[in-house]
Length: 161
Image (cartoon, rainbow, N blue to C red; front, side, top):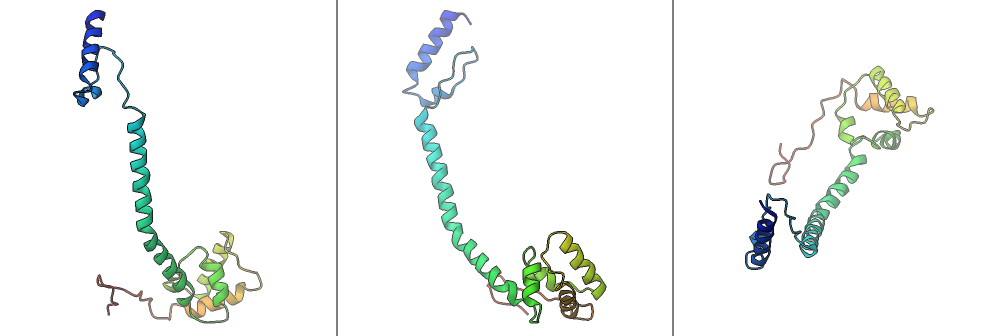
């Protein structure tokens, strides 16, 4: 397009823009500059995004707090009572949920390998407590114990049989 014709097209588009907002978004293939949406529109978009994220966070926080409360409450309650329950809680439940341990059915040799492996990976087990912890785990979670049955809930929230 010739420069004078290009200027006329651009001038006409800018004059019509207030009456026809859609014309602001038109990109003219002649290389004419595309007018920006404006700072107020960008500010409006950012405010909308901030308000939406705040609303989602506020609506989700009670559910998150309830999940954290129930997970913390059941963490030690699920492990069987015994002299090493506190040590097992400290060493194992730092990284795992209680159900991970509850579902294991290992021999004493397998528990020894497992405790040694987890210690190498960073589990904090005092060397003087190692054998007692292995005895606790092998006594409560051995292959001769019945299989772990997790508590199941129906969609109505009542425990099923």
